[in-house]
Image (cartoon, rainbow, N blue to C red; front, side, top):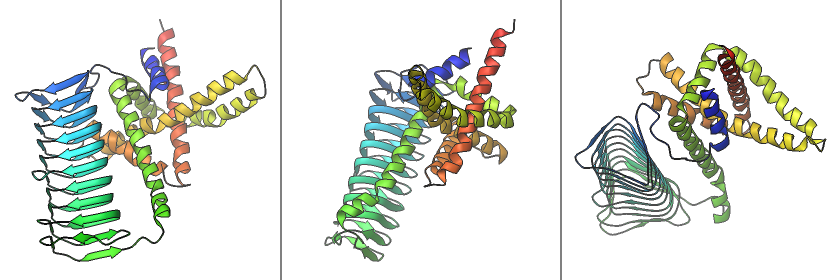
Length: 379
């Protein structure tokens, strides 16, 4: 019954990042503050849930952080995924940086790409990005070097550094390029006003300016679906990390059911998807049944919201095995969850993907409960 208790606990508290000890093969830390000393090396991926996180040493793998303040002054050989109020990269990250943070500051070096959703992004003069920068932010100041492209959306953007292959902006309210800035390619942007290119700044490509086709209010509203999609993706990633780090046994149990009895899981799931809402509606017409109906509806909503994480993780693992991708299980799960979430947010067509996902998960969950009961009752 232990696996089932874990699943039930997850469904009741899945949106809470409850501190937990390490439960996965790689390192997982939960504390008030965490410091990796300068002379220390963490071998493998590291997940940290703390108020403040400071990396002075080396993480030989990927770094996943939930914190108020994150400071990476050492070295990370893999990727950095940060959900924080403030993220500062002062050391070296050999992979990608993906930051969903209030403030992002880079004064060190990121060998590959940076993807950031932030209120303020600062690439310091000493900061370097070896690949491209994709940003969605109200304010950005790029004083350092981006080896390839700088893309995305910013309300105000100031550049005094070097952009190797050009800039492409969906929208920019105010763009200023001052000396000694060097833009190695084209400057493509949409804005209510043309960019201010100061004396001494170098634009090696063309300036391709297009004014907004609609007024500012309509233009802001046009980005609402994008922001909604990013918010949905962020909440899905948070849910996936909570499941992966806190309830790996429950995840494995669902995998087992989907591997061994996929057809049976879909059959049971179809019954639940069709039957639970109808049963709730029938109970609503009776005074006595109202509390039960409300409970069933809430449980149904929570289960269907969680389904994409369990099924997406399973899809990612099986695709990696099928096509022999050389990915860590964690990265394979992440890719599966992200890919499935992207399908689910497609207008109208997303429901066509959502229904089989709900059916597969609810059926697998029913199978797990049934199997656990057999195991419990067997002497």
